[in-house]
Image 1 (cartoon, rainbow, N blue to C red):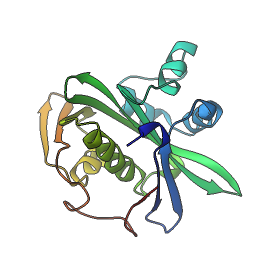
Image 2 (spheres, helix red, strand yellow):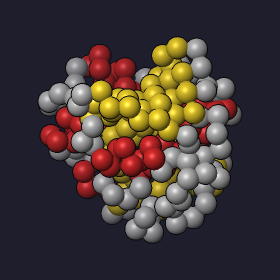
Image 3 (spheres, rainbow, N blue to C red):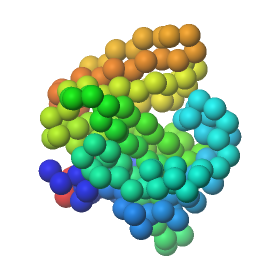
Image 4 (tube, rainbow, N blue to C red):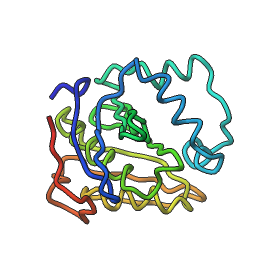
Length: 190
């Protein structure tokens, strides 16, 4: 699987089509526009601290990924005849066979299943890359993100450590056949 060319077509909970695809350097402006649509509370849940701007080095880090040790996908849909990036997910290999995951969905698109779709497709790529474990740290009160992990179809272990929940997932499992399926249609990977 060539993760840098990844493309899948899905359906959101509201029936709209969405493309889950590899992040491209040309997405810089669209990604920055998506960040502008993320409210302070959502940014805090993603970064565990107030985050109002990104340095050029941070932007380059998030946009210029190698699709080996750092894989990033976006959820793109059409709005008013134009493509809009509504969210993104990524994993970064942190040890042999293990990667750390992170997700963000802009506020207008919360509750549509975008995080769950991104999680499932990242797990597919991780499995193809022979990763065994995906991990994340989530604020303990971030119920929507914890639900994404529970709906992933992967065996998941959640351990609360103060105000943070440590998530550990076995990505060797087939997420296509396990867990709660809240998609309107089966995935189509192209």
